[in-house]
Length: 223
Image 1: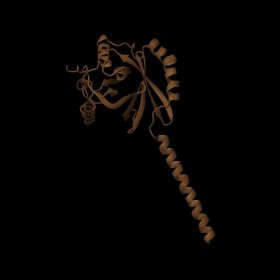
Image 2: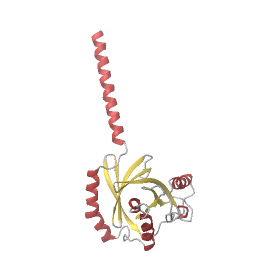
Image 3: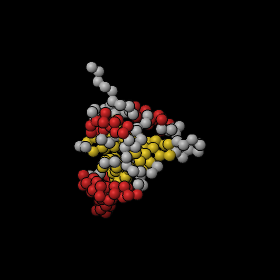
Image 4: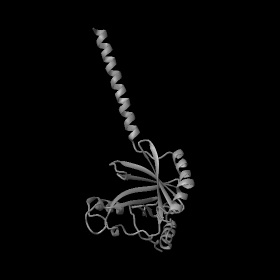
């Protein structure tokens, strides 16, 4: 009888251990992570050699131009923060806009994503979401919440190639790239984006200013 109890106890212990390992594996598999160097190199090459030529031919996401006003804005910020300034501007993908704003904190940016609002109001409005990014080894790494229809944090790397931008993320173990084209409009103040009147919009504006982000030129140092 003691031997039987010992065997049952051992079997239950093995089941519990196996369950814990399976549960841990699932949690780790679902955890957010940035793309690896190998994944980034592969998708960067695909972006340059395959996706961008198609975008240029079809002009699906615009013609990839930047206005002189936006270029002047970027040049001024490059004197203060050359690494972050490389990514600044408005980027477009059909109805999705991504705006990357400079911050008074060096190496940091605010990333704003807008989509047409589902509001029934006659005046067009946009829903807004927020991401904060920092430049590491020439790459822009951005943490976002709920950008892909999920209430979780997504860690994304932004790749710029000329007037085109790719956002690289990992979802359920698969790496994917979403292409964007540079839009010629200059960055507008966040309050002028015809935001939907929601608590989320107010929260984004608060986060924006808390990170020291702005649509203005950098302040000149006092003499």
